[in-house]
Amino acid sequence: MPNFKLLIAFDGTDFSGWQKQLNAPTVQGELERVLGQITNRPITLHGAGRTDAGVHALGMIASFKIDSSIVLHKLLRSANSLLPSAIRILDIRLAPPEFHARYSTVSKSYIYKIETGRIQTPINRLYAVHIPQKLAINTIQKCLKILVGTHDFASFEASGSRDKSITTGRGSVRTLYQAEIQHTGTDQLQFVFSGDGFLRHMVRNIVGTVLEAGKGRKTEEDFKKILEARDRSVASATAPAHGLFLTTVHYTE
Amino acid sequence: MPNFKLLIAFDGTDFSGWQKQLNAPTVQGELERVLGQITNRPITLHGAGRTDAGVHALGMIASFKIDSSIVLHKLLRSANSLLPSAIRILDIRLAPPEFHARYSTVSKSYIYKIETGRIQTPINRLYAVHIPQKLAINTIQKCLKILVGTHDFASFEASGSRDKSITTGRGSVRTLYQAEIQHTGTDQLQFVFSGDGFLRHMVRNIVGTVLEAGKGRKTEEDFKKILEARDRSVASATAPAHGLFLTTVHYTE
Image (cartoon, rainbow over all chains, first blue to last red):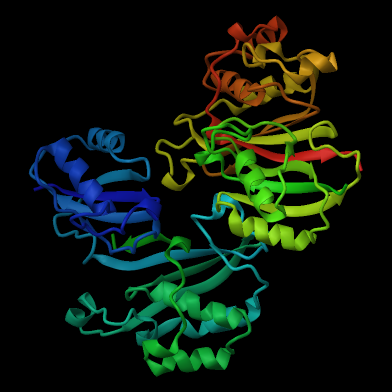
């Protein structure tokens, strides 16, 4: 049975996240509906991971198997003509039978955008979080450096959440390959994270906490202790969803 | 009576343009409502120019006079807290009594954004027009060069429109200082126009016509003849509003 691998981008503003829900518009729900309509078969789409309501994606990966000999470029074109313009399939390929968008994932990358001017630019308001103050970038960089490597990220995991991590036996231990902050323009900054996996709300909780350090309310030492505490209650509030973008999902060839 | 000069940015997506209308949300309407609410006086705001429904602004200028000693930074903060997030006053200053946002204008600049990849990136869909094909940039540049200088732009003026231009006696003659196309990223292009004034739909009609040349459907010679014809019916269709941004309005000091 052919195994299809999809590269997907979406504007998460008007969706209740990736995962299908009965009474709310979701990205998975829209894609399954449209792919089912085209192929005339029920579709179960496996995403590389869930995204929260309001989170965007530039390069989500999803896969599905279907007993159909549909031509790839026709499927791509039909799907995009039926999908809402906030969701686009950028590419469809055939993958080996053992490929699974979620279980085959080797690493993922995210960016988180903030705007630091006194007043937020209206056209950025859905795609960057407004922090109207000068941030101590040096302190932020030092905190982010602490995160790189293999750590127990329990302090940055959404409380009460734990799904796959239990079955994989690694608990809340993850490895971050990259954790940086970059200037992208006047008053425009972005965090970049890559790692072998991310706990629920992990990026947003890290950003929320590291921004407290950037505002001078926490030191690098405080940040280190928060990571070491492995306790969600010591970290800061979850940063808003709309600054977050899933950028890339990596697989071994 | 103090004369206030406002620098304004807005996302035009959800507005029926700049100019106040009775039964539709407009940028001028929202600003007058909010400024009137704060100052407790009826406000008549003069914009540097009108923008069509769906057009955005990064640096619109508007002015109003009011007999009030309101503190500038308080007015700015209050207005932004009451305005919809799609409109932001970026700055408020006192201007000389003779300053008028419309009549004192010396020149204006616009950009027009297009995306040329096969599939449009969802988060760009409200801020760039999708032209899914490779464009002949060289031809476009040659056409744009023809426009720089003082010309009668009647071929690019919305049919049936003519307001201030009659009274100023210059008809549809305008001077363009800049007309360029620039690469801003992978599959991302922007047109840049500055001039001493723009006729209604002028930028969008120029873009619509020059894109025909970029697609190989018109030559540089054809384009020259269109400009020289001074006849709207020979130019191409008006390009969509959502690619257009008013970027700057210039005044003499």
